[in-house]
Length: 135
Image (cartoon, helix red, strand yellow):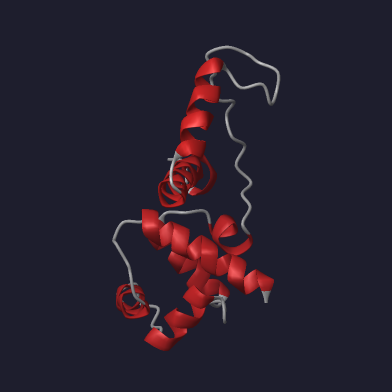
């Protein structure tokens, strides 16, 4: 059951960042039908809620359509080796800079709803290197 829920989370992430804004199971089913892989709105609802997973051929079609790694969509992992990220200065792990401490202090003072928005934004931006295929 966890596998299905985790798939649903990844599918929702990919849909949020994908080529078209999809907000309902009916919209997902309609767009997916255009790919030649029919699915009912009820089937799409099950994918989005973690009640069921698509067949491997439908996962492949979803991944191609959403321009994400099929392995990431299915399993939550990727074979791609990420290039090292450039940093301004090399620091020991877990030792924030003065600017990072200031940011953290400001973040902690925010109301919970705003803090959640910032956390969601950071999560979405960090997905860039994890799920999107490299050309």
